[in-house]
Image 1 (cartoon, rainbow, N blue to C red):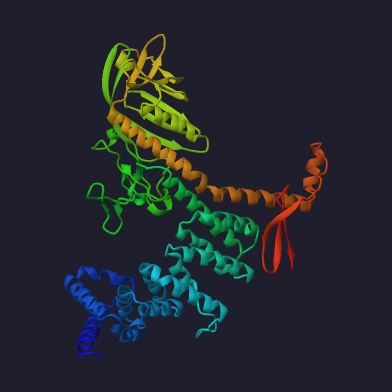
Image 2 (image 1 turned 60 degrees about the vertical axis):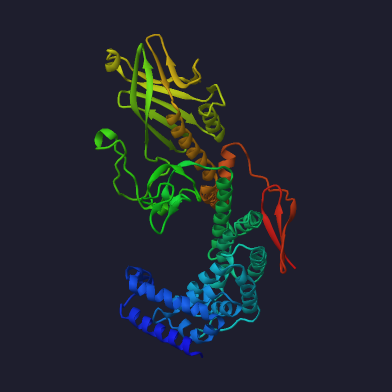
Length: 524
């Protein structure tokens, strides 16, 4: 060992002793950044060790397995930066063995190294499956962390090997490993795996625990991959929150689009989503107060439990409008919400004017967006007015409730919302600023609607499984046939099955009826 390396290791010992004096828990280690002098020393020692290259690897092994102090964290970082085959081999060893914080931390380092880790991980996982090593606790050494590391490296070799593992785990009935692998293949971001996930979800959907988890994780992977397609289908610029925005630095809590610090639940009109909305991540519900109830034009927030993406905070715009023979300019509030009945975008002010754009499908939203973008002369969908503005016109009894209106371009080419009756007319004009806001809100609803078909796929399967369970219960009790007789339908006829090959395994073959969907296994 060179004198220089000895000096570096001595400095490392001193640093570890000093960190240990802080009496920190594992996760608290990362709060050391508050001590600038200590962080500078740590970074200097890491750089000096990395500069030693492979010569530092063997002396660092004793530090790697020292999980009673924070030595292993520094060592893993050094090995990851060295990134040589010898360093990768030590990290694979660490990811494979142990029942503490070291294996997952080593696995993350291997994923960060990238392509160089792929083949060593494949070889070690294969060897562990072919020649299981029993650990100190009497069980086989865990491959979970190595699978996690491999899944985090987007590489054709990783993907192909993970597909092979799906077959292997299913054939050997390693259901827990199979479920875990189903949850991790998403990290490859390869939609080619969707048909296989659908087959697994179908095969294990009616099973009991633990194999039922396979179907749960397979369906979740399908949903997330389909949402990836949604995100990649357009250059989205939506009314979103920082939690899903690609411009948001989660570490610093800073929005890169504005170069400002923003809370993670902050909503703006320039969100470029990198994932779907998920209220479970926010843990905050925005209780909205109108500007009249607050000191600003923006909504006030009250922290409660869970946010509500189907009823997001309002946006305010100035609109000019003609009511009867008078012209006005006022502050309008735009909100959007969606439920099982349908969706609507509502534009209203504090003087009794409200109109709603209703939508049920993506086509409705596409037509509305095209109208505001100038690609259509009118919006053919449903639009309704609710008007109670007698004070403005001097007619206290004036009240219009849910009357149909129209969205058209006037003779000057301006996008307007219009209502006409015998007593008066109302026309609201949308300038470019208001149109930009509306397009962002419309695109947000398009984004939610597209993601929603996959987000709620679990609900569909749960409802279907409940229905199947109820039907089976009725069959077993004989009630189903009684109900059929009462309705005049008669006893249900058995299906004249037409089975087709669904899947082949080493031990058995699976067939599925093309008429009723029933499956059967034939063992080889």
